[in-house]
Image (cartoon, rainbow, N blue to C red; front, side, top):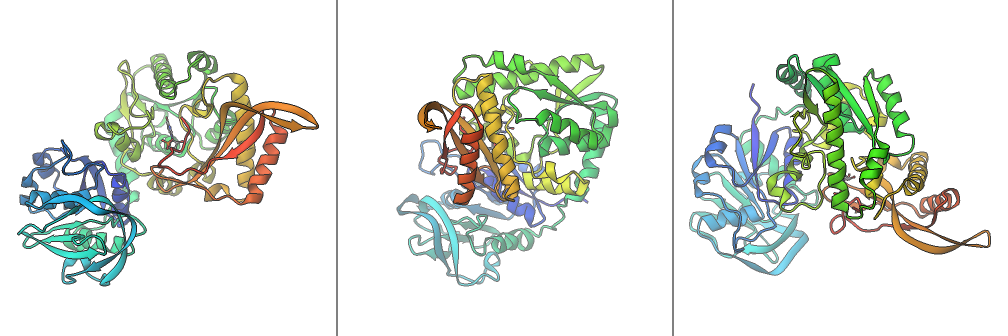
Length: 511
Ligand code: XMP
């Protein structure tokens, strides 16, 4: 049976991904496409419903992202959210203007017309999440207002004869009290989707596809030891057995004893893996480099040349497999790249000289879906719930110039942090915890002696999707313990500070 799916036309909102995740949680497959995909392609794909996302743009910008009005003639139900609502209204002849009051955060929403399918079962008054600067000022003839808030007179619209709906607020955000119910009403009742997106069928289907695509060729896989590359390796191995060659590159920027841990787990799981010692090569290529983007680009290039070189040692290698997941794909799309903050090298930064074809079996899945899948496949908990670790590793956690001494200082500090988080049962309640070494020294006193050593930063975040994050509110006594241990046990650090910035405005990593 072909799966029903919802197509999200992505206008660049920070919430577009979350929207896809919410829909999948309802059990229906959802996929993002850039807003300018031709209408003829949409028709070919046969979605059961279309969502128009929010956007950092305004309709009255010089070149706003627009769609053709033909979309409304396809007889496919449409739901516009935030910018998506303004766009629908604009295309039907409505006027959009800057709001008198910027509305950001929680607000009360009042339904003016309860007799519509979108608000079925929703109380007249409820709490919703708003995030907008513009609003719809007049209602075009073909549309009708169905809800308002205190400062936004037109906060929901419906087409008088077609299944076209529009909301100024964000139903996909947890703070919208009945958001999931509204999405369910749209997806299950208006679009009539069958909830048949199940991760169980995924493995079988993916194994078959890999067998067909790879045939008698060989695959090398860049193995990082993280959950994504682990699950990818597991599935590929299921499909092609020992035609898969896993390669783990020791860049020299890994966590303490990482290589040993990886070898141990791979043995336990019967993965054959080749460990390449490339420390010297990575250190010398970063020698004197300060710029964060330059570090990322150099490292991405080194990785690929290593994979190319290794592939030549094995006969018949045609593919490079990676544990790329859906959020990597979205962030590296040309559209999102225009707003890109960093080059995450596993998708975006592949150099032109790369001759191997890419095999990315998880590229449709979100992180939590990969974890669920891993759980079903029996992958050990210590892998499934590992915090993410970036490909460039400690080199982007040592601000400025990188050298072996600084790496060793940071490895010791991170090791204490991770140990203590696990000892205090805090590891799984935070999403990512690490240390950053600053290129700054400060004066201290230890055993009556003056010290002049580096400042380190503790970065611990809580996040659902790594697109937005808050700093974790760790207990003070835990912070005190960490501080004491690190300053006492790690030579080279005499001051520890706690990063209390959220993302945005900061990012999770410092470089
Ligand atoms: P930022 O710093 O962009 O990080 O807020 C978001 C998440 O991505 C991880 N990260 C990377 N992962 N290659 C990776 O595989 C990279 O180059 C990279 N850079 C950042 C980061 O650790 C966080 O989980």
